Image (cartoon, rainbow, N blue to C red; front, side, top):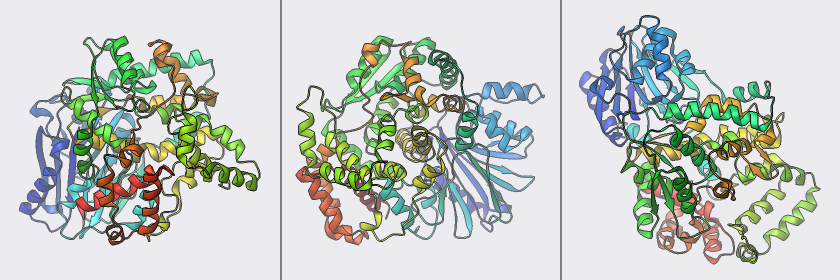
Amino acid sequence: MCGIAGILKAGLLQSDLQRLSSKMADTLIHRGPDHGGFFVDEKYGLCMSHRRLAIIDTSVAGHQPMESNSGRFVIVFNGEIYNFHDLKKTLEATGVMFKSNSDTEVFIEYISAFGVANACRAANGMFAFAIWDKRERKLTLGRDRFGQKPLYYGWLEGGLYFASELKAIRSVVSNRLERNNEAVSLYLRHSYIPAPWSIYRDVYKLEPGRIIEIDGIHPKNWKVFVYWSALNSIYHARENPFEGSIEDATDELENLANISVGECMISDVPLGALLSGGIDSSAVTALMATMSSKLVKTFSIGFDDSSFDESKHAEDVAKYLGTDHTTLRLSQNHLIEAIPKLADLYDEPFADSSQIPTYLVSRLAANHVTVALTGDGGDEVFGGYTRYAVGNILDRAMTAPHLLRKAASLSLSAPPQSFWNASSKLFGNPLRMAGDKVAKLARILKRDDFAEAYVSLTSSWEDPSSILECPQHPNFQMQIFRELDNLTTIHRMMATDTLTYLTDDILAKVDRASMAVSLETRIPLLDHRLFEFSWRLPVEFHSDKNIGKRVLRSLVNRRLPSKIMDRPKMGFAIPLAHWLRTQLQDWAEDLLDPKELENSGFNASPVRQAWQEHLSGKHDRQYEIWTILMFREWERRWN
């Protein structure tokens, strides 16, 4: 894993290019502490810098920027090509000679032989790269299929700038970058900024599965190509449905998962796994334990609040599989230490509160290993979110007369959420965050159709213009959801989440949290072959009778006893609602000062009202409040 950055701007001198290249690279040392290098071509005003976290072939032969054997191409590459051995054999059969055992060298030689788009299609892995074609005088940027690795780019001050993180671009532009209020509006609704937007005007995220070619002489002449599309893959898979029982499907899944996990375990440095104890991470860890000749090192996070604590489940899985397991129990000191770092880690406003335990478990793992496999992506690929399980019920409920649904919504929202939380505890197995779930149901029932209901279910501030004067951007999630009307309700939700939430929330969260501590995370459940196979399956193999991820559960049941795995889904949530009312209250109060809010452009009144409702326990407004707090922290750090 690494960090990359660069500039294409005519007129810059060699000394300027070297200085700027070095400055950009210095901001990315956390992504690559092992080595730094740069390439400069003064004739075209090009510099490309690289920071290396050495994983495969840790020798100097793997240093970057790297030049192809022909001398035509120069590349800076961030990520891993898991099937590089297979690609290398293909190239060797054509007479290509290699100087190293690096996957980057394989990738650049594959580009030399077959072109950039074909190399991206052939590569199974996670990556973002920039490659300079000396002969064609062309710069190409590319990103992996799902966007596991980040890449920002923008035309600023007469040139093209690109980098793994915004801080590298920010470090070298002369003028202060201007906040993009359209992106702020999207952030307030979704708690993340979706690609292609970034928090700044004229700076963008390269979308997954895309390459962009830029003319080296006329940088404003550029083209974007889609080499792989998740949506096209979904449609192709649905046209070729799997025929067989769930046992047959489990057999095929086991074969593909073994290949994916096996490829992800190739490493020249210590390797482990992040184990929450849920289905996804348990599946990955179980397969690792079967293949590894050593004890697999596993890591988890624990909470004092038992309704959020999965550490006991993780320890049970670890004990059964015989892993070398380490648990970190979160204390108030961990919170106080972690929260001030978040704005620096994430570079732009980001408000998925599981960013805290993700960062802390990554730091824990980084003390022992350099690479860690995770179970991320399992919910989107195999249908695991609770909303999928109840999707069909909600879809049918939305066919009831609107007046009837509105009346039901008013009845549900009348009592304070604390009432529903207390009522839930009267039963033997209380529903975690019952008040929040009832509030979401009340919100959904007021909507006109299920598309609006789904967006409501996944939104923070549903109407950003009520708290900030900003342009109302068309709801991109709703547009995607409505366009998928030929899929089942559950599959529409899965596809929409894959195209939006997965890349810019889940994968962004994991990348920034892990790279902040120089830990490479690998995600075997996002192997495109697994994805394409899963979408061939009937919907009931994903979610049926309130049971999600049925086929993945079936695989896990072959490796772990049901007494360990048969339990309600918890997710990687934290007791944020309670923390905001206790140990984080003073910190939050400072950031939510009315004058400070107004200075930031917010309408302080509705924000303060939400805060008071949360403190009183009348309503759980943790998600809306956290979104504002993370924006304010970002603003303090970077503005």
